Length: 373
Image (cartoon, rainbow, N blue to C red; front, side, top):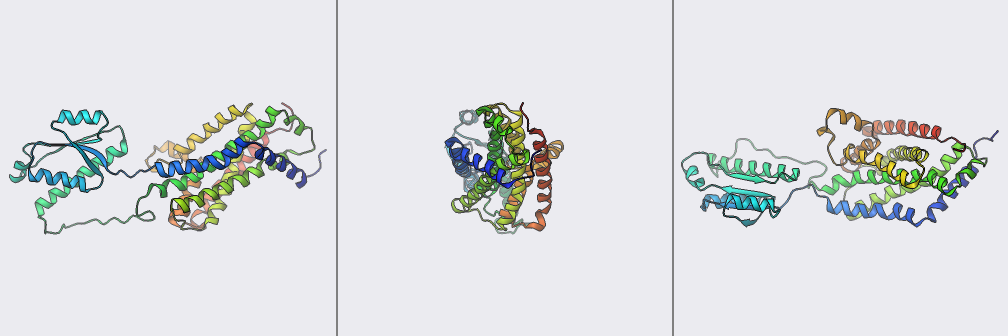
């Protein structure tokens, strides 16, 4: 009969796993360098704010009113007039060729209809292959034409009866980095914890050392804890390092207590380590473990609210997102970093993640039988 739980045996397993990590350059590169590279790539490359969209125009009217309308479009800072076309067909061909995303067609009778008090129509051709640009172009054209209509009806000096003054909270400049990087921290944390722990048992299988571990007096709980401790430490250090780089290089403010976010991150890391441990018991090779890990990673990216708002998803997918651990930590991360949320607002997130962590670790531990297979 095996003796009771031993910290010494657990420490020996953890020390062995740590030596494996430091002796494996690929693991160190994946752990330390890849998340940082992806942080800078995504932080600088992703920008959801539509600005300076390439636009061609056809001004059949050639009047003062048509030029004023074109100036209103260009002064919006969202549209950049790059070329004048001389027919609607030419404008369409430029959009098809990718030289422009928007085409503005002003008819020849534009000024005459305005002076006669009739409705003057303009045609706005929008490239619908990129939904964000298409939606922004439609909104911009509607806003500018509405403003021009109100000015002509009410006059330049008369005040509008109703005026909206939006005030954007927490991210007044609508910087994409402020939105994406708090979620990116969670995504990188999940990917590293799952991938590293998924290889923990598989590496032993391929090296033939798993049988040796089974023949030692190390208990199953000691083996699991010893293998998981180095990855818990590495994942949390990586999380803190990404937060540091986020603050220094991308100037994303941290308005809440970061220790609160760390406390909520801990059960999330345990959950992902449990997922990786379960994968390691199912896979027979490192490649198979990587494929299974990616299979759990992609739903967390698309269904957690990291990229797409949860409110815009169908009802059934919103229910699925509730079962994804990343959904809870991404919301907690944005709450602490951007909204200044505290424990009072986020204790439910911690409770859900702890339930997931305990359930996943117990399930994965039961899958890991201390016997030869």
